[in-house]
Image: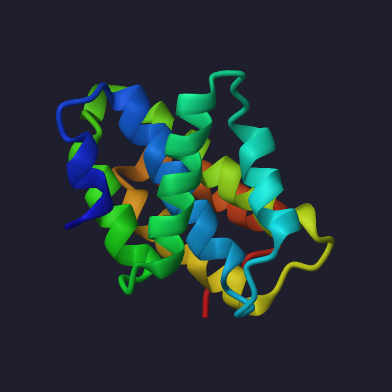
Length: 144
C-alpha cells in the first residue's frame, strides 16, 4: 500500500509532514547509503517527546527506505493530497529537502536532480515558478 494512503483522512499539515519525511528519506538515500546520521537529522527536524509519535516517524522512514517508488512519484502523491489553499506546505517541503541536501556539506548531482524533480512537480503558476527559480538559482541548481 502507498505510504500516504495510511494518512488519507488526516489534515494537510499531517500529509505535509509525512510527505516531507518520505521525500527526505528518498533524498538521503541518493548516494546509496542511508546513514544513522541522516536518520537522526530527520528525527531532529521533526522532534517529539511522545514515544508513539517517534515510533510513527521511524516507521515512515523505514517504509520510505524500502519503498521502490521514486521521489517524483511521492511528490506527485503529496501534491494530489495537499489542498491548493495550503500550497505554502509545498514550499516548506522543498526548503526542507534543500536543508537535508546541504546537511553533509556535499551537494551531490543526484540530490540536485531529485530536488529539481520535486520542484517541477510542485510548480503551479508563474508566480510560484519564479519563487522556485530563485531557490534553484540560490543553491546553484542547474536545469539539465
